[in-house]
Amino acid sequence: MTRLARTSNALTQPAPMVADRYSAAARRRMSGPGLRTFSAIADTWGLTEAERMRVLGQPGRSTYFGWLAKTRAGVDLTLPVDTLLRISAILGIYKALKIVFQSDVEANRWLTAGNSGPLFGGQSPLALITAGTQDGLMLVRRHLDAWRGGLFSAPLPGFDDIDPIETSDIVWA
Image (spheres, one colour):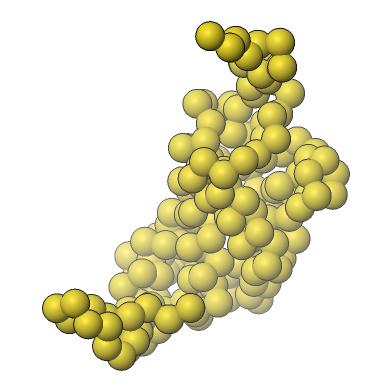
């Protein structure tokens, strides 16, 4: 679907994408803060070094630690577009967990527990996140975005305090 620009009441040509969206300058501006935030989230979730590297798209070990050293030292770095997209997905997942769940304990329990939903196939959402594919990251992000947006999600045992409505609960006045 294309976005359409509106001038007065007439629809015109599709709005152009921001030309410098993936420029080196734009990526450099986002790379340090993005990687620092990713590291903090990975610490919160208890991700191992191997899981962190898989989430970031399997950079070489020396590359990964070089990025971290530069970020911690406040030195500019420019991450690849794929890595920034992966970090963006993690930020979206983290934000959605904060919105959907009342506490970090509940969010972490959902993140690490096996999930029988068709998207997860019995594995935990965290297993899908750390599998190393961008698709896995985006599936979990879209699932949580839909959930926080109010689309139906099946009740989760232990998370829902209200019993589902039964036919006998309906009162006709």
